[in-house]
Image 1 (cartoon, rainbow, N blue to C red):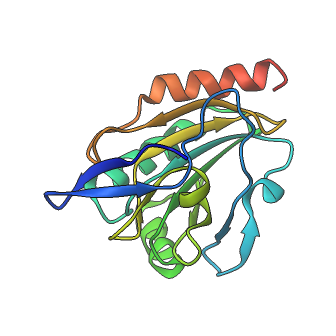
Image 2 (cartoon, one colour; image 1 turned 90 degrees about the vertical axis):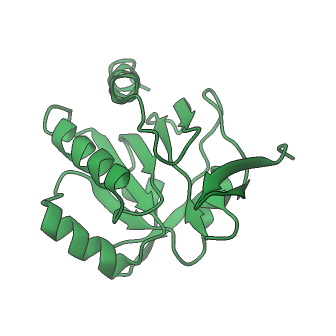
Length: 175
């Protein structure tokens, strides 16, 4: 069992639930809702691809908005064999509306709102607000985590260059 982790949310310490995953370990598959409410295996839908998985608290916040837009822009320069998935606890119809307004077409935005399957399996579930904490993972084609970064504060953005480098390295290594 992982030691108790906390993060500040609305000025208070909030417990983070779930198992922390690390580079070199097998990535657990997880299920999430698509914007049309299908409940799907994310790895099943992205078989054969390197995956960048970005967990965000809510697309309706400034940092999450900026991060998702940045990954959407970066996707244009990446191989089609790299899937970028953003996951939040926002409801699918909220995600669909936000993506439409933001012009997000390169990033697959999915919802962990109901089961919190991803949040629990990747150690990203904030207990009381039932939101995800910010984290980014790169998973190779064989399902091995090549990069894992948990942000220390909800307002911290990921190291985009490190994430993109890890994804390109996983793609080029055949991983």
